[in-house]
Length: 502
Image (cartoon, rainbow, N blue to C red; front, side):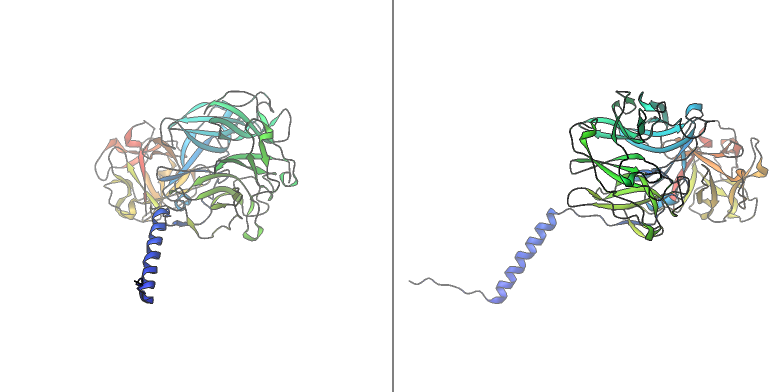
């Protein structure tokens, strides 16, 4: 008997094909990671005052930014979005009066090991000319909060570094399950080079001699002066890279180069291969000059790589406080090396890191730790001399403050409702002097240091003129209790929690 064949209609064939395609798409979709949406829009700079040598970490829902100060203090900014760093308060996390290390703090970085943060920085000796006294120092946090509090652990230096142990721009490299300190220095009179030494723990060198792994020999490394500095580890696809800054920072040709660890021993110069051309440099069309001294961080969802760096906005900007902090996303070349692209012009609107979900703060409330009440301008008055007091937190604009960095380790507190600034009455230095609102006069009586006091974002507000702190009179908990200045007593009536608002 002949076999019977049933012809399918063209419509049935098309329907079957569509079903198969839908099933295939569903399968592919199910096996592909879902990328988060772009983060909150931002524009550079992220820090326009004291923005050099930036280091940025994303940790536990917040970004933390720390930069060079050129003084004996260290300040850090915290924000739930990258965009928010531009207006976040600068909180003092460390100050030092020890004469051998109380000036010219440069290039701070924080690294987390075993649940604690270690803060590395270089600093010089007070009362001496810059900069032969620069040495590298390390602090250790008491717990998991990047803001601290920190204690001093010691100096990291070597017997072969000249002059006398000079070492700057230290970072920590992890390779072969071990820690290594990388920095910039001169070994036995060499040019300013990249140097490395082994570590036995995050605050101790296991050898006091350093090895040079890169010297400035190529033409693009010697503009103005032959310099290799600012080594920063970057790990990707099982490979280990070091970016570094080359040429003199006083020039517009300060730029980034790249090393890769291609041998087994990080302490051997032959284990490092230098790319023969720079990887990130000036972009005159965009008005970006001398981009360098960078760090790296990842987006909140872990899918994007970002670079943070400083740059000047003019070709004659130099090495000072005119440098601003900037950040942008980067990608990877087909050969597995980083592609940093070109530095972007200031003011360019960019999508923030993927995975950001928080709203960008525009102001802050200050909540007293003892009473739980907010720093408030009485009645929301716009009058000069209106009293500053505490009141039940209600979300009103008279309880919101813009905390604006003045570029000298201090800030001014500007009330959102009134536009007045917090002011010490009559510039008094006496205990009990009133805190009030007043027009901005640009004097020390209206400048305050926000000094980290306790985890939970508690700070004390220290008057720059008086060195006294904002205090709730008699530790009262009632609405309307006066806020005045008083000698620091280390009690909760003098501690204020920073709460982001919009």
